[in-house]
Image (cartoon, rainbow, N blue to C red; front, top):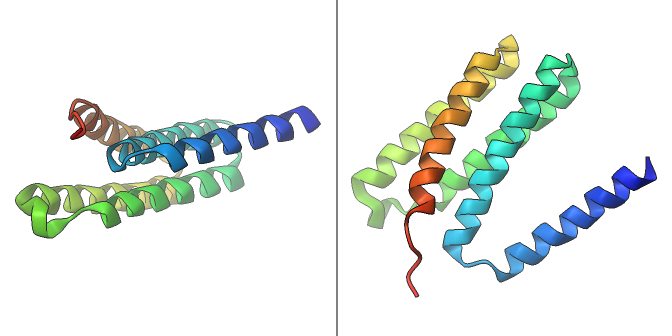
Length: 128
């Protein structure tokens, strides 16, 4: 048990160090990956019938997607930012539904959508 706690602490320190050094592009990548990770973990919890864990993990995924929505610059991003905002809103709604109905298909849908956005984001080179 202590080994798991130590490993979590080590991982948390590593993430904090990455955040401190990351540019805005990398921070968005990290948020997206964190969302994908929480969705996958929630799916595992749902399969194990660990419903309390599932709720916590889906809540974290919802918060991450909220962070992605907050990061959108609608003045500069125009239609693209507005479309992403609508998509993030839809994803949040689907996560709530997945949690309420223990629906793995809805988790898979949101994971697929977020994964597609992340692939596109990863291909955008940050400005030097």
